[in-house]
Image (cartoon, rainbow, N blue to C red):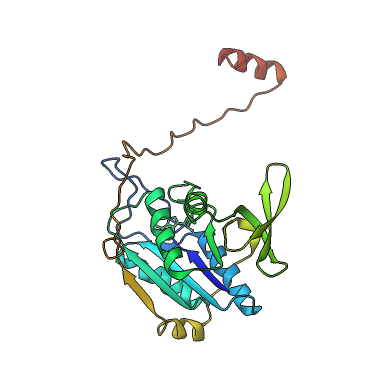
Length: 249
Ligand code: AMP
């Protein structure tokens, strides 16, 4: 069984992001970049299936700048077998990402496609859903547990408001993964060394016969308004008074 994992390069979640002076986006020059944390969980899950002999090959795919080979190499060090980098210099919007992933699916014919539930930079939470529609594959979103049952079927437990929903999907399928699915491992030194010899195939939308067609224009990116400092009230009467003054009640 082949698993394809979509991996996005994002600003590291520990970095305090700054808006560019011209408010056109986020400052990413000289900023630490990393694998999107949900994509790391997807890689970990695919590698666990390989460790259990359920999967035979784990292939990573990233659409991004040439520097994304660093994140792909890190994913290979976690245990993936090979990677594909679709080199694009500009930001690619979700529908184009999904269409490019669709092309990779047609080429690679994976049994399972794993994605993060969302990219922490754009918070779109839509690429997996779009890919499932384009490929006409069943989808399980926000997976907190994935179990192979009978051949060609998979059980996905989804985190929803107020509980868990378990679905049975026919393979091939598209699954987006949530935080509680697993805790990604750290790459060991021997695996980091091994990853240096693994293959990253570099291509581009043009080579794949695809032209990007962005549909949205970002008008402005702003930092959130600074919260005013709170005050302490002596008793309930004062609280009611203050709320009335603020026209909350
Ligand atoms: P989003 O819909 O943008 O929140 O992203 C959800 C998931 O889609 C991510 O966690 C990745 O698995 C995948 N994805 C989004 N953008 C890219 C990209 N540029 N390259 C590869 N995978 C991506």
